[in-house]
Length: 212
Image (cartoon, rainbow, N blue to C red; front, side, top):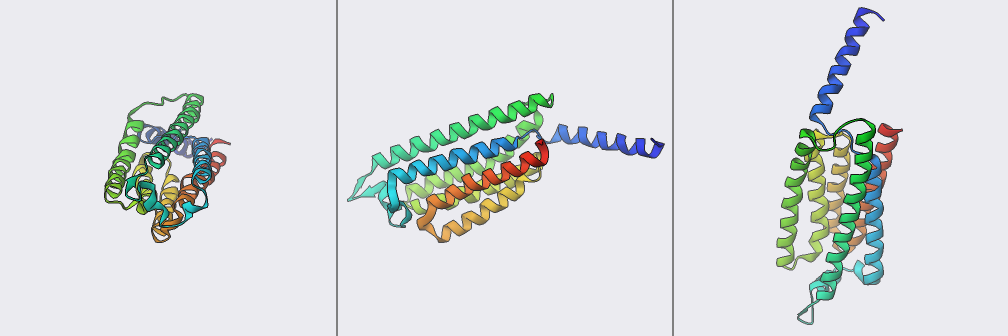
């Protein structure tokens, strides 16, 4: 090895060390795959519960009101299903990411993780509060597009603190959310595509790109 090659190798190693100290690069592709599978299972359960009527725009108005009384059964079902999907996706995501971090000899909770979560949380919390406002005003049909758009913004905002590839998932979510805002009668379908299919595709690509 020549002196020039050795210098290049040293610079590369320094760059990798700096990247590990500023970016959370242990995010597992299997986390995305598992999150997508959980989302698809949740969408399937919702479809079975609501049936074909869930694909009509007027249906969303009946989630909260029908004959001037609140459909608490719909609200309770949606809340329970959402929490179940979220907990399952986060739990599996944590498990796969923790396993990869241990394999690489790193630490799961460090300054880069905190930066990632902080910049991810800002758009997510904002989007969640905005969705609550939409519900209070009865604009139920806009909740699905809004969640997709703000989730995409969160991914892009957090991409500078983890793998750059995550920004492409974010852009895809935003585009899908904008399309969903036009075809408001198909919120469940777009949710399944955005949180299900796109996560599985992204996770699979990341797994074979960085983990195989």
